[in-house]
Image (cartoon, rainbow, N blue to C red):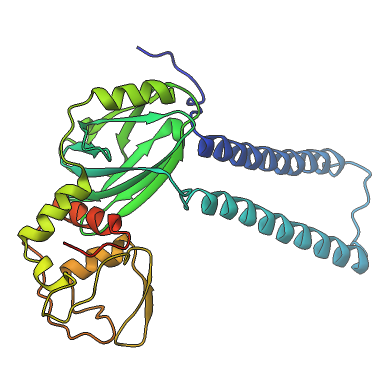
Length: 313
């Protein structure tokens, strides 16, 4: 049994920033509490019943100056705290370029993780110390929430869409993983571990895992099996968008909008192709809703992400 601690382990860059923010809020709140409590005690002692303290009205200019002063101070303090918390949150929302991407699928009541080389785990995640790791997550059933207290990170995992989070672990060790959203009768048992390893140990661990076809490779096979290549191939007679290099590109739509082809756009284009039709093309693509599950969507999106100028096969 682990010893009882008042503060969880700090094992990521984000955790250090969150702890600093929390400590700052605690200090500011404590200072305000001491100030108000001190003034209250002084006033209670000075103006107690029977004391000789003057009890007349305050001059108007004193009342006005005091009110303006504490109102302005409170406003600037609130703006500073908003900026501090917002900057901390925004910094944690954008993964750095080149982050190791791991796909996570939540299901009652387990976490399934998959690495770029095809290695898989259940209720476990391994991460190299000092390297950024990006998690692309979705759920096969209900809402879950990926929560690692030692990283101070929590992200809802939703059915029907992708969510993501990233972290950079700083301390080797084994840390608990929880589901922080009630998801059914065995919600309390939906947990696991995140193991942080030195980079060289992580490389050896990955190499030792049973490896399958990588996710883009499986997506390419599925792309062909579903007949997608019959329309999107460069030599196809059907007038359909070429998908080479589409990921991350700005796409002009028939209704005049311009959107970025991120994971959510690619997913919606597979399930709801008539919603965001590319300018210059007819809305003839059928929906694959009900024909592919969440795992298949991850495979297809990973394949489309991997296309860097070559035609879709």
